[in-house]
Length: 627
Image (cartoon, rainbow, N blue to C red; front, side, top):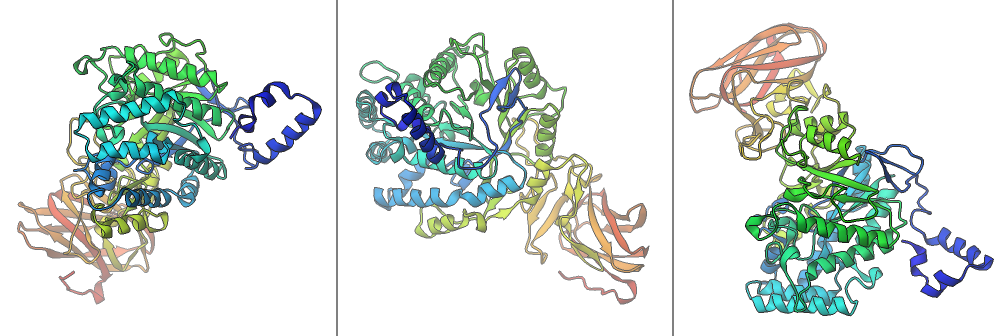
């Protein structure tokens, strides 16, 4: 917080004596943000295509989004049929009072992200957190109540019109975002900034759900009518939602203009479907004009923070948004964003439109042509193989990124897996959700962390595996496709192709198809093993000797065949006849040397499912064929 902002105007203008300066110095030492953290964060700025700190050293921000917290997105919580936060609230209001609903959301926001989550991100090596938030957190309780009245009856146009006119009156009377200290959104920003600074991490403020909604996607807009940010006018003919957004950023800039913990302001998240089909221009004229307003408004507060622009089409297309096209005087400290989902990660992939920058070649070319920093504000929602290829490709170009998303319910794609909780519309479900989202109750998806933080040739055991002993098929080593495993389809690189990378979607997030199964004790099986696929396991052989290996298989529709190798040593071949029932195939290995080795399982002919491999000394081998 800027302590000068707290002083009355006459003090700021007229009091310049020695006593005042000494008093001000003492006050700044006591209350200015960052001064008491003892950290090394300094204000970031653009220097040509680089982002640098106060000493001119390049800073590449690599971080995580904490989405689903200050704006609920239905797929994160697995409430997809509700598809937006306001529809979740509408459902809750059928069985509880507004006060009870607000109390639930207070507890939800208190539990979903805490200091423990931020500390965990820091320990993984990330240096930034992008904070997506909903504009309604900057409304007073009375103002949020007015929005809730629309939620109760969203198909009633009179109610929405009445809400817009209330916003207009509050705007004219300077009652919107007027007392920052009292606003819930400010408290969350301050808390996250404090937690991050303690870990020497930067924060990116992201207006994820803008007033009126920046597009048509209900999850991220939470709007009542599509594109109202660009279309809705009040009784005075004003684009009132745009006026509100400008004022919100003015207030945020006034408060945080000297806060070095904040790296960037992400002015509008993912504007999209701004096109002629929706009654807008075909070349981003509305977006360009609005960005000019926002940039000028922030700079008018004497705020020189980096400003992150997001193009049309979910953050990627910049026709008429390049520095030469923006109607602004101060063209410094602009950063251009890309959101990378379901696209190729090869360095030669490109788009014929140079202003479409989600592919590597376009992103780097845009940076070099316009001499501006670029940053990938969101990337993820794919397999580990795609994650690793994406971040390693960006790292090679020295382009920063922020992964999406830290938490998801019952999903291996997030860094933290939230256990299923039932239904958010029941008291039991809500209680379980509040409990399950807490950091201590989440499961760390170690394979995701590995994909994001390790080099391309990294290999590590997923579990401690020994011979003799039982090896769960799904406990193959951590690492990339081609290093620790191979699967025929391990990454989605075309947004139009909805083929799942992991048929079954259980346990891990690689291309390997893993399903939950009651037919094996560990609860998971590798499925759809196709010819040419393989898995490796780091194993420790306790003592040299010959072993009996048992493979627990479910056949396919044709004869299946698997081969085993320990390092370069062939161990044998397991064949299984077609059928529907589980079978245990037994083979005897040659003498195995003691010590740590790589066990490799190769699919020669397709197999339906593999549950486990069990090794026992040949002389004491069991012929058990059960689980």
